[in-house]
Image 1 (spheres, helix red, strand yellow):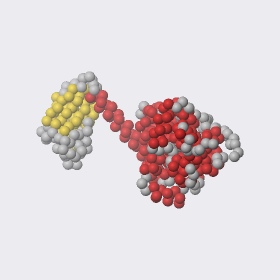
Image 2 (image 1 turned 180 degrees about the vertical axis):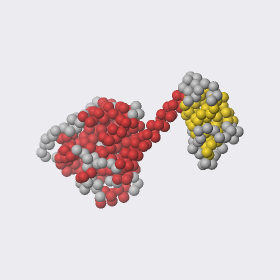
Image 3 (image 1 turned 60 degrees about the vertical axis):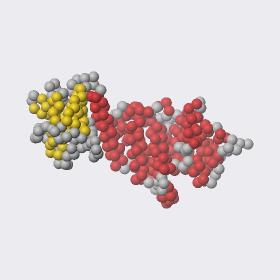
Image 4 (image 1 turned 180 degrees about the horizontal axis):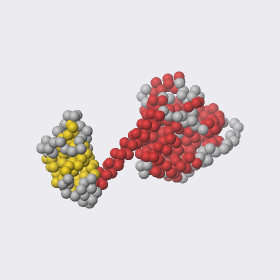
Length: 202
Length: 196
């Protein structure tokens, strides 16, 4: 006669059903997952039980509120573009011809640019720029023989002692350009209205 | 106990699942359009299952969002050799719901909600989008189990109870619960004609 729960369940692969239903916790879960790595029959058994649980799950389907779709797709879009920007920034920073240029600004703090002429892009960061009122923004410029072309706005640095601004990726670098920063009305302007606080030769 | 005759196998003949696996491969490469299609396919079971476990629509929406974003972030880990795309997605959803239930400190509140308003209790037939044939077959197969098998599996899967919680809720020895869940799930698997 077998005694349920004592002799019988010493064999961990009998826990496959509970595993598929997420009914194991703590030590039992750890024990079963360890066992799963070496057990020959368990993976197949877990697959069958998990597929069975899937049918139970399908049977519970209800139409979700539209707000769920908006929230999920919105978050995915944001994550995705952040990932694209990160990848583009990483590409500039690791470009074979990447050049780093740094300089103090007349407003205080330091502006740093990594430029890749082959990729025609630059990445701008800064430390210690003074905090601006909400009505103003630091604007970036490619400065060439034909004048200054907008290269983006600097997001406000988080409050703190060091005040490092998030990297800004700017595309459209052409040969002979310098890179400048001005203080402009919030939202930015198409052409600079003030004297640059720093100009970096690339 | 009468043997349960296997019915037609809805799980086996599910062409949508094949596509879901392929779509997940596209999602792993960052394809947002593919993800939207995945969303449309999986959101009803993901949300419905989580709501069934949590018994609370607002919390279910929050946890469903977390689960669906996990699908987006980790689609590269989907391995067709280990199960269908739907199984992979619903495993994520169920684990998230169970984690929430077990971490909920105000579990007493949940018990009250569970007792007073079982959202799955058939008062929302109109909302149920599971193909009625499919849901009907699951119900029929559950009905074919012994009462203890059915109650154990239902508490474990639809309420997120652990083995000891099921044993204590039903006042039955832990070892018995483990046996009943295993035997019941085998019968359910055979009755549903699940292929894997």
